[in-house]
Length: 265
Image (cartoon, rainbow, N blue to C red; front, side, top):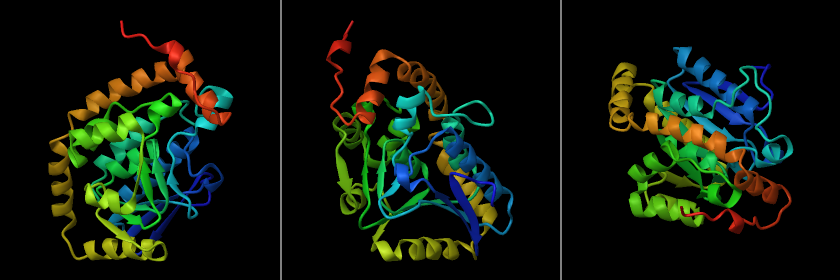
């Protein structure tokens, strides 16, 4: 599709491959990027020849590093979009609702909102060079919806709290050990492996797969309401002095000063 600017979308056999094409920003997403991913997922949903979606990032350094904090520091938001909204919550919902498996091909760093995207995918295949983690509390952001509640279903409460509170980074093997990814392969085999997983779905019943995905989702669909509440809170928080300090510190490559915002009352 030639009308995309921030992503690319191609159909390769049974797979619709969505690639975030912002390597100069470590594949961080702005409002336009999110909107384009939503369009690509809808194209994949409507295409009867597409049996699954592969989500990946351009280059070798990053899968996705979440919301473009530099953009937020520059303009106070994530930039313009056709709808006038930052639709990350709708993207999360679409990854869950599309009745086809979504494979994250994690080619590098998956951190912050980028980590949340790979968590929401049905399965994740990681390059040996991939690294995983959350950074919200370091940059004045958070995901108190699917990004934390659903994560705890995958790795357990204790590990999920460690990931969010301490903002540590984990290599691909550590991610495999905690059940955060399904497989780890050499970097030069990542997309071949993802395509092989997609091809393996071809003889399977698409209706059975759709019902199975909906059945798995039913157990955690109640988290959608929490996610909506969390996104509303995040909108307010990122515009607050504390949220703005996190974005400014990131852009200026300094340690943020959150001390003056401590208030336990």
